[in-house]
Image (cartoon, rainbow, N blue to C red; front, side, top):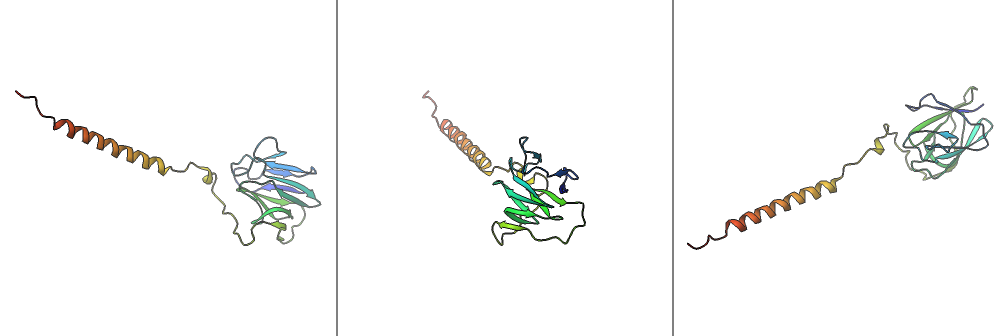
Length: 163
């Protein structure tokens, strides 16, 4: 029986048996297989077992579906190959002696496009610095200082009442 073994921390070691005709994989609870990782889309892909192999169909995921580093829209995952969903790697194991890894078959997206880099956990999803806010604050401070300087000059030049 074919099974997918997660090789990426913190889900490392988790085993997924693909037995249903079609198995949905994603981040949210309405999938048959839930991978609680921010880089995995809500509904990332669909898996269909075909003998010892698994037919994989991407469901327009944000971070892509890859077989052995090649981005696919549809493809066949063979024993020993790595399926990557976002930054989560899953290896297909059958319990049988694995052959040399075979390149994936199927429809490839963007020939010649390098595989997405493996990111540290959640680095792509951290809050980015907002330079526009910093510039706005700096301009507001300078404008405030200019107004204060203008008021000081305006009131210090007021002539004294005649005696």
